[in-house]
Length: 469
Image 1 (cartoon, rainbow, N blue to C red):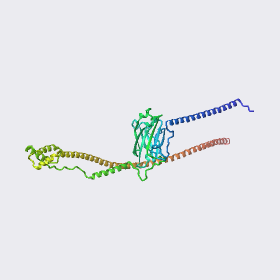
Image 2: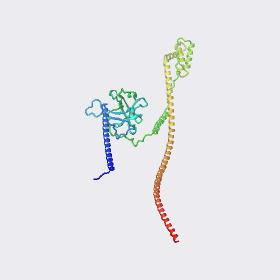
Image 3: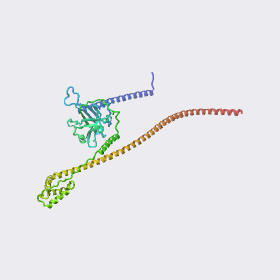
Image 4: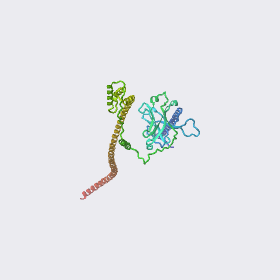
């Protein structure tokens, strides 16, 4: 039998105690992990039960692999796309009347960014997403829009017409939901459309309303029309044979058309008003003015008739015609008939001239404005020509700078390459120096040993020489 010393027994007891402590700690950690797992499961079940009670399905956001993801700040949300049918679904009916995309945003009051996008949802060949401004788009209202997703990858000159509704859901009573409807032709210039003043933010945050429940906001985009959803949407690229338009191409096309308008305007004959013919009807018949008054009236009439009619002689002409129309003598029978006929239609006659002068003044004003616009067009076209020349000079300068930049890049790349070679050579020299230092140390040691041996030999030689020399 082996008898252990006191020190050996103590050492064995300490070893056994350490192993027991390790086992107890491992069991304790295992129990804690199990309890945490049960707690997480119960917590998730509770959240799912809450959403079910509110009438919403609990599902993770869906994202198609073929869809380009929107550039947006991450936020906690859920989404769902469902078809809608008019009335009861008939047997075999396949086409819905609209599609509703529901976007639930949790922790709404914690959102800090200016705008947020929903996930992309696809109907037919069109990809859409909802855009919101939680604090308003420069206004104290919730702003909601429908956005044509991936608009930069759509075919050149694309346009999509859509009739849609945006709905802010009252989660307590759907019948009180806020609904706004519109339609729009989406283009590259107007790729989103909707309502900047959808609802005042004060109403959204009012606890009496059901818009914000448990800090969750629910927005629905309803696209009207029987568009079927697709899972894989290939966004078309612009045809290779159609060059992409640049701003300068647009300018050139526009001002070329403007030049044609200017040339056409210059070649067309100017149109003006027609002159009035001289009025030569003078007249007489009288009732009771004196012969002198008749002669004065005739002289006044002659002076009025000496030029074209003008409204500033209307009163003078009226006075003369009034006198002559009642004259009994001093006028021939023909003059009397002519005066009576003219005087009977005097108001209509002067009205025609008044209308003419007003219309003529309007014509001259419009013509003046047209000439001013024409002068502006011509001046702007000349400015366009100078801009075009300046652009050509800038393009040339840009090409020269790009050429110099390429040369600088080439020199830089060559410098980097030479630098790398230098580093490799330096590393080789460094490694060789290290190896050589070892060899020098070894050679120095050999030399020292040789010197010691040489010293001993020299001493022995000197001693021998002393004894026998």
